[in-house]
Image 1 (cartoon, rainbow, N blue to C red):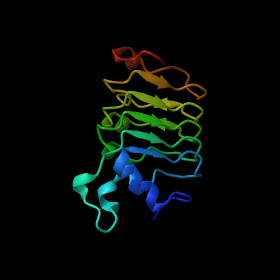
Image 2 (cartoon, rainbow, N blue to C red):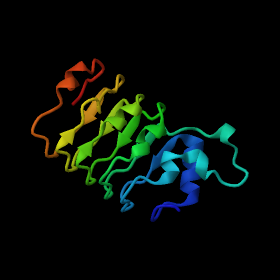
Image 3 (spheres, rainbow, N blue to C red):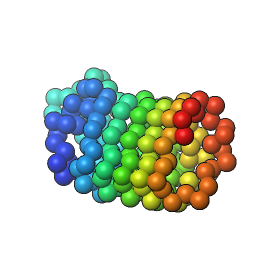
Image 4 (cartoon, helix red, strand yellow):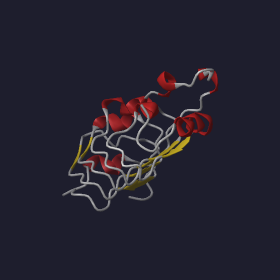
Length: 149
């Protein structure tokens, strides 16, 4: 089932371009079409030609949890924008998206970053501003590619 406002054509286009913008769609969770695109192919659409997501914009929604299947999005994802949601916790499973270079989780309610959650070797730009963090994770210093935090 497509998220409110998101159409099958939007998901189909994302499987062709690798980019999906669902900013401001009042989403409560990350749609299954994103987490498992091969399970949601249109009739006649071949998995052979699917371009995996490399840019995902989910900002200004009402998403509160990064799902268990977050790591299924894959290594190709290099840009994740989720600012302005209701996320309280960054789980370790985010590190399963090892290709991430830019992550914007600002303007959420994050008070905890699980150990290893930001073990993203290519991460160069991390925005955690305007959250409820008392301290940044000690492992942030291990990110050799980080230019902007």
